[in-house]
Length: 264
Image 1 (cartoon, rainbow, N blue to C red):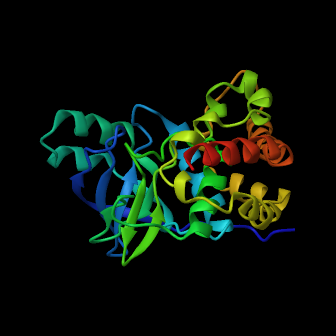
Image 2 (image 1 turned 120 degrees about the horizontal axis):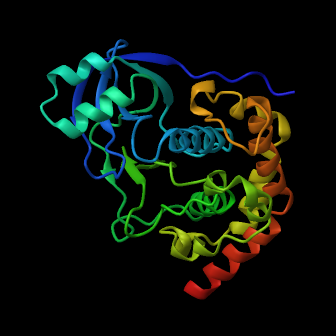
């Protein structure tokens, strides 16, 4: 059995600046550990499910050994809204009082540009496999959601992954389908070792590892849903879906291989 996982909890002490590149209007905050973080707001338009996707996918990436900035829970007081002149941000802060999710800020990091940096084929293949597994629609040339920091790639922004949880009635079917949008993945042209990535990564995501990650989800982020009798049933549904996705992974692996071959 995998040991219980945990995320640190920090308390926001200063709202530094909004990051208007993201549709959810994340922000750089300073916390009580003197660190800077990029915080995703629970009250943003995508709602708590975006934070659930960020948390699950980010920690899955960490289990797989993919480069991810640290994720932390971030407590925020609504009083921050009093000193914020932008009414839109005021409303966002008030709607997000309490527990949010934040990622370690990488000072000086730049957006990944495939024309400027050719990634290692093995790493590119692992990231492509991972994004096909979690159905991540948001790692394209238009929006890479990859940062380069000290010469290394880092994965960010997984709120658009796991889109099955927006339609639980059809989640079972979604688990067995290929991920056709992998054809738009920014790293696909460099992913020459997808089959090797599959053999390396899939064994790391067993039921214990996935359950430990799903158990991290704060109860207040799991909104009531008519598909489930209670919260434990909703948590089990996440675990069951991901395990089914892995059991049927040949479907998305073959789709990724076909998409890569089309780029050659």
